[in-house]
Length: 309
Image (tube, rainbow, N blue to C red; front, side, top):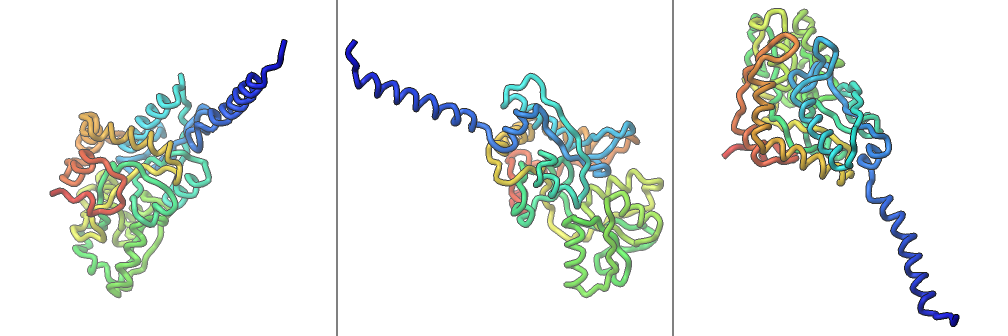
């Protein structure tokens, strides 16, 4: 049989194409999605006292508004990767450890009450905003502290690794207040310092202060300042930076949830009804900024982006 050089060329092209197709297909998945597919597991970072976003119930199980959102994300990832099952691993984080544990791959999502700001976006990414809160302080009514200036010369606590302690330090310097600022390891420890009179006030996101006061031995003994250290700021679920395929899945899942009737129902469940473990009702209706954040999902770190018209 006479050798046809064209057949040889065609075979060579076909073989080259086959060799190229293998790596290309293998490279379809990258970053977090690739790791989840290979391990069959996704790891969620949770908080132990960020009520009602992410906290432990009576059975030491992480529950909350942000946790429910993260489980919706898990469902979307499972569907995207066409997995029959996907193991969800739970890893505790604090204000100080949440970003390092996300960056080093220990966790894939941070499901809590983390403020989305420009500075943090240099290190990590956020999905669409799930809550808007302002930084204020809680104190005992008996202390009669009404404004930020009333904190002058007093001992005030805030949680280390948060935007709140930074805002407190900035206000302290700008207003020359001479406040003795104490960093606490978590929100529960910080509130306890006010409860036991080791600090006169605790600076934190207003919704977290409301939940801590509501869950205390004497809820009526506390008051949250009207004076705020910030504009209403966005909370978002954190994920690793520069992982666009994973972010695309996460953003689509959260946007779909927030824009659907399920988003309002989920909000109602955690902010307008009794929640575990003590049956507290935070009674915080959805405000105009929150409604806008759900109607027009955004990962913007700018508070002004959520201003309701």
